[in-house]
Image (tube, rainbow over all chains, first blue to last red; front, top):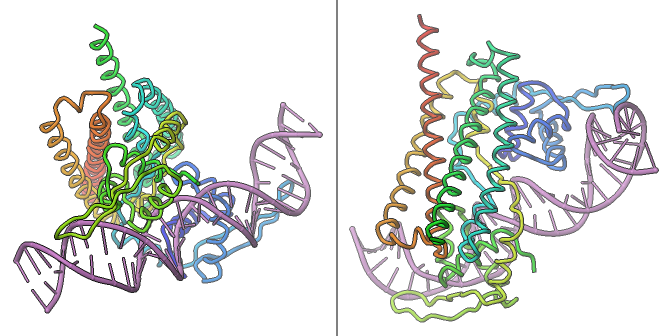
Length: 187
Length: 187
DNA sequence: CTCAGCATGTAACCAGTTACATGATTAC
DNA sequence: GTAATCATGTAACTGGTTACATGCTGAG
């Protein structure tokens, strides 16, 4: 069976805490969105090859669900992956491709593009700041404990917050530059 | 014909300056890598639909090449795209997926992961800082001219530099935290 | 004489999305 | 009544990569 990054992520999510396919999709949504049509086949393959176990859980008022948990073989597989070198990151960002060519339009197009980006990034910043604050309040010990998964989550949140804030700052710089250049042209 | 983001990027590259497929791949390499097997079919489709023109260029000592340039229809198509809203960015970063699960290993694994990331980011920072410096020295007027494509390139470089520096800073914070926590455990 | 660079392309495959199917419950 | 949430899945497609084919030149 082929283990791609998403498969390892699914394993990592289930190792933190057993979950259904539906819950995995929700967990992934904020930092690496994936559709259920991608997750369910991965779970089926993982189960067929003995990397996860599955238990049917009856629920009332809701449909029944399949809760998956990682086997020792699955955990070993994940551990081995963590000793390898990660591939360089891949970024697909339409916004950047648009900025690349925006010089062919009037400067207003750039301004709109940057303003919208800033708004988007401000929303993301609020979202992650809130998430981190909630976790800090609820699990003040765990987030500083190297052997707790919440420690890793804290690191990822703090990275995300710092990066997003940096991008907002850049947007502000571009906007300032833009206003300045306009005033000089008009004068 | 279907216009995806890569197709618009190819159009944007050719609008800055006519190029061969081979040169487009090189241009893309630093900020949105693509293989020639992806670019050549895109060029063929663009030409078949009249969005680009193609001229055979004889070369001595090198194979002949096909140089493509954007038609007015192609430019109009690109301009229309710039008035739309970009899709939210997609990031595939193995490193982040590894950090997500690294709590199951000894703290040394996290330390190695972060140190390698820092080294990678430092290389990227040097690369883009150098690129920007060269452009600033060679085209001091263009990079502040809204109607020059170099202005856009400068914005993208400065963003990349700021983001990369921010990531290095985060790596340092994690490493500092790590050293501190270890000293407390040993004491 | 081997390797890197220039140059163009095709075929097979993997990763991920869109669209669809099914069906119950709760909130407006 | 209709939209959202819970819950699992399949089929068809798009986007992108890997591997392959071809061939010439210049540097070590």
